[in-house]
Length: 60
Image (tube, rainbow, N blue to C red; front, side, top):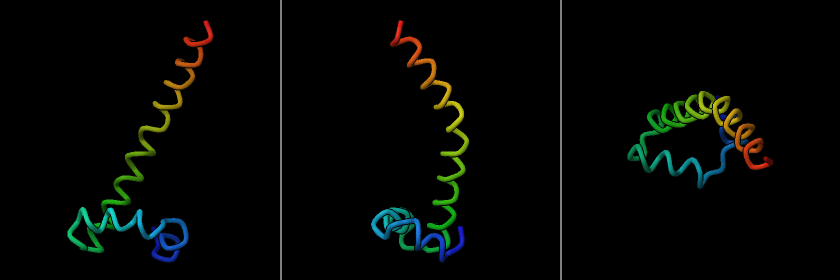
């Protein structure tokens, strides 16, 4: 994510979690954040399917 977009869409307290996890290494924090985004994107289709199945089961 470009730094100007990160500053616009990612709050400072949220980004500070990544800095803390990487001992204030900005490059590693950026890579960790990007890896987290990719992981979330990978799980999204599965979670969407699970949601549909859950709604169907609850409405029986």
